[in-house]
Length: 113
Length: 117
Image (tube, rainbow over all chains, first blue to last red; front, side):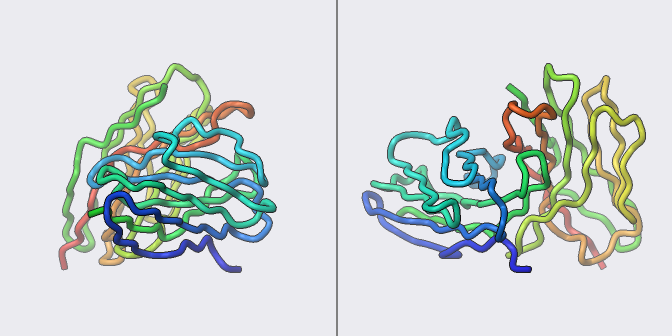
């Protein structure tokens, strides 16, 4: 069974540009989470999807971040326009039920210059 | 809001020895889950061990065990007979227990464990 996959693994962009991160959860997992780790700090929650619906987006830092989950399958996280403080590692996780173990992807390292 | 604190940014251990990673947390909830996750270099984060707060018995998974002190809000991870493959970043995490509550994980800042041959 394939695990959670994320694309790209690394992205380097300039301030003001747009970047879109993609997450493919484990097949059949209705719950999808996005997290972010800024260098040296704790991993912080961004938002939670149940199927295609946003269950909780309390962790989204501002309106430059837009997350979607079309058809309840893969999810994208777009940052537009990117700022220097957006640099970090973006993790995606999925679970079969909301109370079950979350399986993590390898992360996307975003560098904003 | 819950917080998780890992006060050891870096730790090292000699191969075959035992090491303990510390984690403290703050919550007003009485029931919750605690986790230790491991992220090896350039690889995905995987669950090492999980503890339900309502269980008094400390969780154990092979060489990994926890010391859960609910009153002290402490949740340390002990790795016995350390192996080179244990080298990784270790994250302590908290999650609410009740359905309807937030399902997201609250993480600490991580402890980078080095295993010396």
